[in-house]
Amino acid sequence: MNRPKSMLVANIAWARETHEHTPGFFEALARGQNPRVLWIGCADSRVPAETITHCAPGELFVHRNIANLFHPDDDNSASVLEYAVRVLEVDHVIVCGHYGCGGVRASLLPPPADLPHVARRIAPLCAL
Image (cartoon, rainbow, N blue to C red; front, side, top):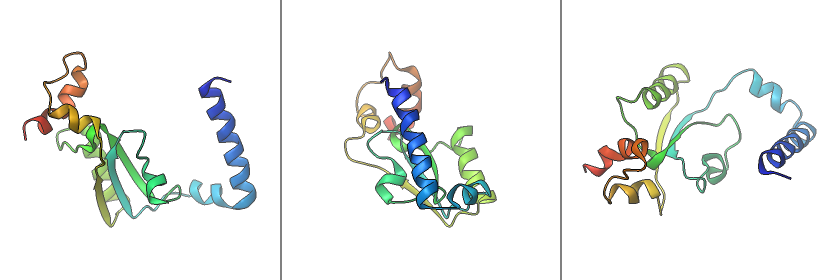
């Protein structure tokens, strides 16, 4: 089975199991979210926020990117922060780094010419 198909099958199984073991789970999520934490983390697949914090869906408002950087002039990052603070009224903002971050490692090397978007993204970190 190819990976996307196996992921879909796993999602269907998860939804069925969750519905059976936690009645009302999906109905509660459908009514809205009330996370108390904005999590700004790295896009690295080894550090999924909900998994490493044992949080359930709806407990974290998550923004992930290369090297977990926050650029105030980046509309994506700024809109996440603005929404989390002004609409969701989160109590905490956590910026979480991790060991072995490729984005941080790349910032210590010459800018990757073959990855212009990554180079632009990590440029402020390179300047430190």
